[in-house]
Amino acid sequence: MKSAALTLPGKPKSKRLRHEAVLFYICIAPFILGILFFELIPMLSSFVLSFTDWDILTAPKFIGLQNYITAFTSDPNFPIILKVTAKYAFISVPLRLTVALLLAVLLNEATRGVGFFRTAFYLPAIISSVAAAVLWQWILNPVYGPVNGFLGLFGITWP
Image (cartoon, rainbow, N blue to C red; front, side, top):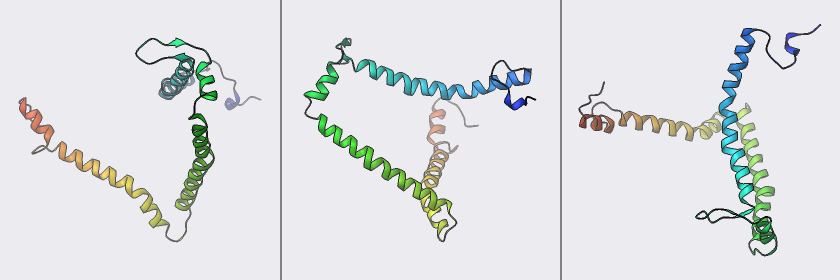
């Protein structure tokens, strides 16, 4: 006996399920477009441009693997770059992940002083939100705010 949850993908059977599928695709569209435009297209463009000689002012000229050959064989900075990248990959990334995990555990555990650690950790985010709220309150003030003064130049009164 087939369960409704185990149906194969395809055209939904009812109007409600079709509507739900359309809503699903509408909801994931910004994510898919963001990945496409801000990650995949720039990565592919960089890869294609790595096979060209391009100074931005003239049209790119295809040179094949010459950029890679030059980088690996005759660039004096390549070993330094490789060393810095390896340090980052093997020291900085694991260290940051470890510190982040320890902070998450510290903020999640019901230990003595957890209230202090939670407050100290979230205080910068809260203070910046309060500062932004106070700033917008001043900007939009109907008596002396700059937006009201600017609109007053055109004869527009604050509602």
